[in-house]
Image: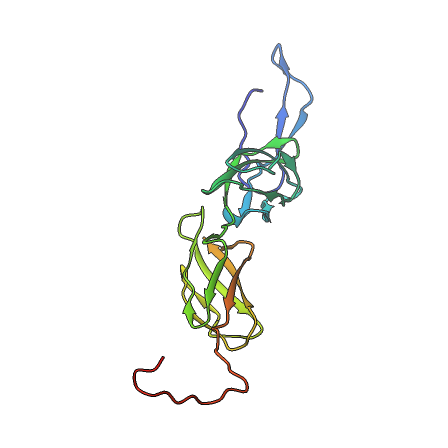
Length: 238
């Protein structure tokens, strides 16, 4: 008996063959042959694709309509590290992108149930790099009542910036956003003070590590005179 049997359900099914032998016009006793046909398992990945930031964990849940299905996968990396072949019900791996553009990890997942392999599916995980922040100049020194002029840039295209600021004895420094820190700072004291700007870069919904830049503000000199007396001069006198 050579026949191709198909089970379109989600649980094992059977085909029973009743075999009757015949010889010289005589029929023998019937024999029953039971063939169990297991279904081919499928696999559903949730989510079907994923976008994460560098140093983040994938979270891909695997399921099937066929009970008892197990899963194994291979992976091809492009511009990322940390992905590896494996098996289980969840793909949870920390992926790293040390480049300046997005990379991918493509997981090829094969379902197996009752010794039957189903068709593999591919799940692509896009890994965005973490943005950095570059200061020009790297530090700044100004006089009181002058404006800062700090340009912000990154090796990651499309990066935006926000900052917080602190500084004892300084006024005019405020939290903000943009590509340039331009603020008029005032030092009303008699000693040099410092304003600190902590800048956080963001690109493709990924937040990079905050970096600090320090602005030194010198006070304006003031002329003082003690125990002075008024002097009256005649015209033409030195």
